[in-house]
Length: 182
Image (spheres, rainbow, N blue to C red):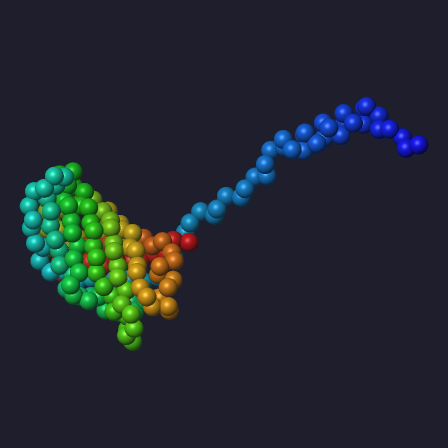
């Protein structure tokens, strides 16, 4: 006749099963902190700003994009026809929303860039920039997050990552150093 399990072994097995099922879940590893990899530089040529005037939230201005150059992992020309729509807030912050097109060297499908960002400067530095003075970029904060759109298979990498840029405002152009966030 088969032996019957003892009451003690049944209780021990039950406790072990409950303990195993209520154990803390395994810890999930944290994602590595992102880093920045420099990938390209834009030199965006700009025209004279078009004043829209005071609107809720600040003064609006449109800065035409009249050309430029892209060098680095992507090489090409910035085409005329884009613009940077800006809101200059009373607190010295300029909200930026730029949209323009890059024609890669060698032809092929174009790349659309949408680049929202901010520039923050003291009243004095803002006035000097507006007057066309070429200032040290350490005097102001200028950052943006470009987003790319293209149908070019070879440039698909532009649509599969997050990018940030550090900007410099010069009298006739804006220099943007573009970084891919890992």
